Length: 418
Ligand code: RNT
Ligand code: ZN
Image (cartoon, rainbow, N blue to C red; front, top):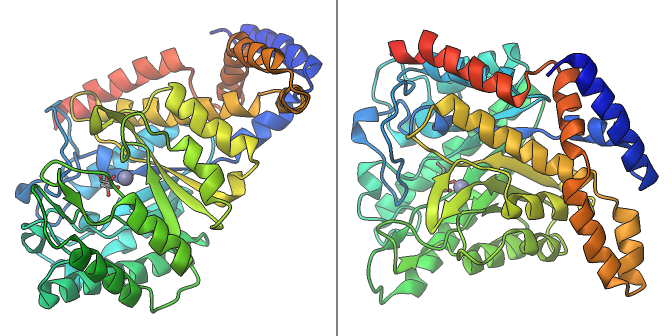
């Protein structure tokens, strides 16, 4: 779109929002301050560099075989840089332990060191990005029977405790080097396909393993723990359920991660925020789009995403939440997948920030619920898209339609040659 048109549309929108008590300039500043943590694993279908031939296991699956998967660290970095170049704002990259720079050697999970991530830190520094981290408790022979930190065999639990311990140390190093707390997420796939007659014992093991892991305190990293309802192969029982981690997080003062694909399809993550933030300081989110199950589809602007952003903005808790993306669609251009999802998250926050909240609350508090609903409906057709176009223009990133062409060119020039 022509620059003059974007500007004219924005000026008109600005006036319309001002009449409702919303300052669009302030909204744009707040939007630019929201950092998303971009998951590295959309580039290569969660394979990593430890043993890519080993494949993905642990109840998660990437489906599709669109050409152009990143096969080396350099390719992952190039793809992430490409995606970031199409996003306004400053962001973070979320790494998994299997993405270490192992120099072609096999380094087992209980052997990884900060040095294996130094090239990532250097790249992040040079790219003006911050890093987050995840221990990898899947895709490994010692997780093959479905259990890791909750395993009945102490030696296997100890192996994974050592791994997580090292991952926390690596996170501390990343946070320190980059001057921004590194968020380390623990997701354990532990669970089983069929009826489990000792559910309590596994959960007790998981609790005790986590207690051991958290004995050490760090100052440049923050921990978070992610629950799940079920996975492929863990349909009957998941050790780290929502109740488990909610209990653990609240009693141990640890941050909980809520993944939008990890609940019953009609259960919404957005409604959990106002409850959980009464009892814990911060929350981590994995923004995802589950279709029928934890399918990890590319995030789009839908009611789930809008409700999520609205809750955070309405509660004014942007400074108490961390927003990471988590999906892996191998059936479409993978850079496109990042850009659609990240921009969708930004659009949802923009939509939420533009809400005439004062007026809506006045209606609510005086029992004028027709007016509240009517104004919420009006918000959907207010010119928020003009504000979005202006945000892209002033952040020097292409508009949505230009992105399509840009990504298609990258596919032709780079991805198709892999
Ligand atoms: C799995 C969890 C977890 C993973 C990543 C790769 O269901 O959502 O967060 O997606 O760790
Ligand atoms: Zn997740």
